Length: 374
Picture 1 (cartoon, rainbow, N blue to C red):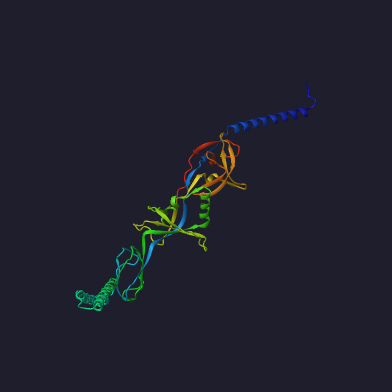
Picture 2 (cartoon, one colour):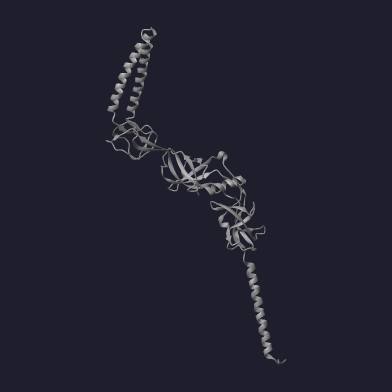
């Protein structure tokens, strides 16, 4: 057989070969696509539960009693009996004032008292026998009572020559050095009582109002009796071993700063907290009721809002818009968009595309509570 049109033949042959090659390539691609396994992801199972919601604040320690140590008589300071800045016990001698003047005054008061006492003892039986007048009896009794009071005042003034610590705590530097004359009410030093220790902090008014609103809506439960527990993190990063209590939350907002003053009290018998030092305070007691919390790494922020990638019963990826509330530790409170039992992707979001099937690497079915101080 003889071909009369060779160009047509060769064109048809080339077209057939090309089509065959394309079909072979498509088959290979389809086979390769079928061989790729589903993406491996970690899945977090949502669980609604009551969850503690601690609050964290910058705070400062202060002595529960900052007491001024003052002279109560006029005298010269003879000596100081403490090291400035040391811890002193209640009743410990701090300053010794000159005693001579007050010892002499007490001796004189003693003599006057004894004389008046003898006169009163002499007059009283005579009055009962009508040997002296009532005026004489009243005068003797008044003299007796007056000298008795004067003796007591003289003894007190003599005792005041020894200036002692009014409370146990840390002493301050001396305000007047020995050898100087001090007057009644002259300031000598300070003593800060450190057991118990006050921890002063401030609560931002919007945060306090938010919690009150959530409590009104039934989303939050305050501690019984409004008594909050407190814990401390010290400057070295360690948690203080003792537990305190929040004893005061002000009922008004400070107009200049917009904060609410508050205070916690901690036992400090080992004196590990010093007045003036800064600490982190964790106030515990508020509980979110039936709350849905998810790890922050599950959330994607898009132009349309926050979104998570859910996984349905067939392990297909489904985008799920969510409405987020406050952040608590490393988690978000979800106000809408998720319910108890929903599964969302926590690791492997880059591999998870809507509509694709994924494999679960690790299921986390517990909604852990955020821990204060972590």
